[in-house]
Amino acid sequence: MTTTRTSSYRLPRSARAAAIALVAGAGIALTPTAALASPGAPVASVPVVQQVTAPNHAAQVAVDRALAQVGKPYVWGGAGPSGFDCSGLTQYAYRAAGVNLPHSSRMQSRTGFPIDLWHLQPGDLMFFYSPVGHVAMYIGNGLMVHASTPGQPVKVVPAGSMRGFVGATRVA
Image (cartoon, rainbow, N blue to C red; front, side, top):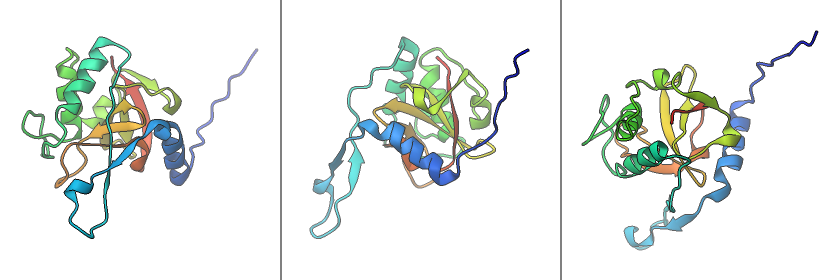
C-alpha cells in the first residue's frame, strides 16, 4: 500500500513575493516615462506590454479585452465598461470570450482549475489574500492587469509587485 503525503507548508509572505517576482518577473521590461515627469522630478517606470499570445482563443480575447480597459477608473462593484473593480474587470474580459464568471474574486477562485505559480499563462487568474479578496489577470512576460483600489485606474503591473498571492486558476 502506498501512502501519499500532502503538506500544508506555505512559504512566508516575503518568500512567496520573492518567488512570484523570480518566476513571473523573468520577462519584465521597464521603460522610463520621462516625458510625463516635470524637470528635476524622479522618473517613474511603467511596464511595457509586448505582444501577448495566450494559449487559446478565449484566453486571448479575455487578455485583449482586459488590456483595452487600462486607464479606466476603479469603481467599487464596477463591471464596465466605464469603470471596474477587480472581479468586474476579469468578469468583463472573459464575458467577451463567452466565459461566464461570477462577480466575486472569492467565487472566481473556485472557477476553472488550479494552476501553480510556475505554470502561469496569459489569461490565468491570480488571487490574493486569505480569504481571497483580490483577483488579477496574468498577461505574460511577468505582468498582470488589474483594478486594484479606489483612486488607482486599471493598470498593468509586475506580477510580483503585490503581496498576498494565494493561488491561480485557468478558466479557459
